[in-house]
Amino acid sequence: MSSYFRIVPEGAVAPAAASREKFQGGVEQAEILDRQRPDGMRGHRFSYQPGGRSNWHVHTGEQALVVVSGRGLIQWWGLDEPRELREGDWVHVEPGIPHWHGATDDSPFVHLAITATGETRWGPAA
Image (cartoon, rainbow, N blue to C red):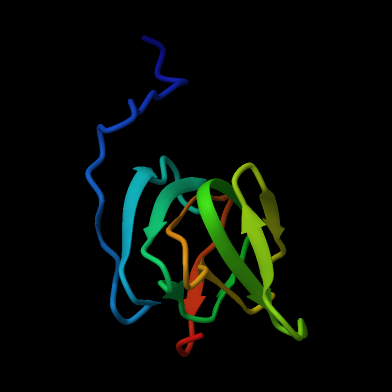
């Protein structure tokens, strides 16, 4: 196999409880793609129990969220009410915009997070 590609089979990475300092409620995360070079891309799968949420946070690089299942919410700074997310939705997260995301109160929620570059800076609970 070429060193230019890396395949991570579904189920090859076990989820772990997400940090209680960064997430509220029942949230698990799996680091599917770790950085292969400094400031490189990374990918995670997040699974939220109903009502589970991330804290407010900011990315210093671009990120895409891809909704895999369930119903979720996302809110960014300046938005009066959270926007609902459904299976198949994609979200482009601009660098430097404070936001949070998580499950609705009545549905579990799973999304992939593909972060192009940069770091995540964490803030208070949503």
